[in-house]
Image: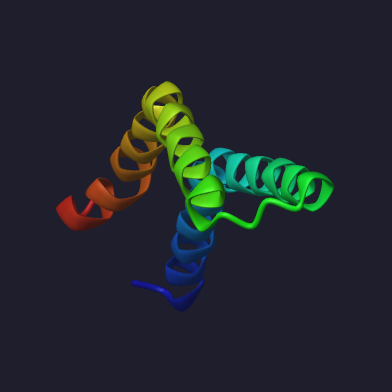
Length: 88
């Protein structure tokens, strides 16, 4: 395997990882910001108020975007990793 081929596959794998994690990270950011704003406005400092809605929103977004994540990983493996293993 050439060094350039290795770095191209590594770059593509990192890009896929970023694209897969983006919906979950953006959801956690938006929900955390909204709950933080709500806590600042109402002076409620309950720890479970930040944790439970954020986990619930993340689970919903994960469930909705699971097909996108699966398709992205299958495409990456079938076009990049498996041909390299087989030797094609």
